[in-house]
Length: 406
Ligand SMILES: *Cc1c(COP(=O)(O)O)cnc(C)c1O
Image 1 (tube, rainbow, N blue to C red):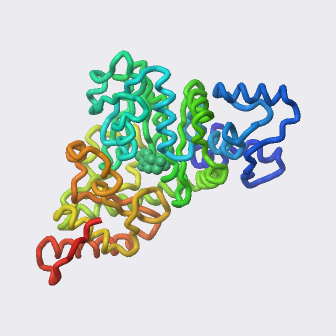
Image 2 (image 1 turned 45 degrees about the vertical axis):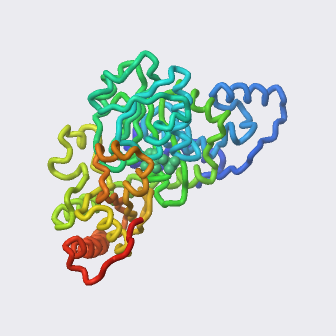
Image 3 (image 1 turned 90 degrees about the vertical axis):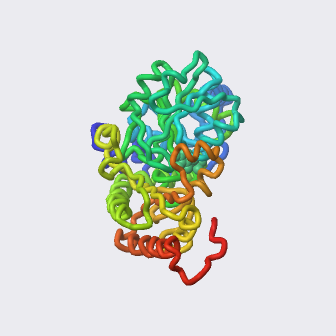
């Protein structure tokens, strides 16, 4: 389709609907499919076990489901990928990528910071992969003959650091580069255009967008997609069709949601900079915060996740979490409503403490996922909580607050 992104978001993955005589997405919940011909079913099964698409019958819903298939086609279109493969969670998607990569070697190079769960999975050695942690500039030196994959996240969780994908791809040479693009969504960044071979999303976040779906999806070329489907068939991490239906439905408003939340995030980040209790703001849309000029070249905008460090450490951060009324203190991100959380105590609690320090995940750091509420309502809620923490860190509170830690 030669249409622009916004048009594609509304129409992608719907090519077969008119022939089916329907307008809204059909939701197919069948776990099994009638098999009128044994020979035909056997052939379809063989093709799917090798990572191919069904020929005729889907046979069994762990192998293929048409509702999931339509969502995959839509997402592939938005990422400009050959194909997409959907999983039951972002972590199931990452696990499948690591298992598929093991066909090539047992070593991965990973750039920190990463989502806490990804960091934990890699550091645990659970999947038999050895990890070398690297800076974006150090990838060439970290690569070995048995390196199967380079993993990076941009913008990175939770400090919003931006990684230059092309610079990493140049160093990785023949090794596939996987970009976790969860924070950007295909609205703001399409890593395949910059030489990455694999794009991963925790679809739980912006793609779902309403806080009611756990899902993961990988957009890539035909060869990698087949390898991922082979892994998915045997390990069973397929997406549920109801989740796929909700995701596909949500894609239609993805550009509108991402752009509206981004406008508010720019404003919140700017106002945070002026508050006395705030020591630093991490947001790629602020002047001086994007030294490599990645916004405009690799990203179409800074997104809607803002992190900031407050004076007074964890106590002060906990006070802010306890004070907000409109924002919900909760992990996750990318929903219609605004969420605020404490990375060191929650999402990145599992990360090695020294690595946390090196990446700037301090005890005073808070991360906001800005939602679609009115920006002035959000600011009056947040600034009220910041004022309360300011009084406390200045020691002017009349009360001794007992254990407020999360
Ligand atoms: C949440 C998240 C994940 C994990 O996804 P789940 O859907 O929770 O399994 C991976 N990467 C990033 C950047 C995330 O924010």
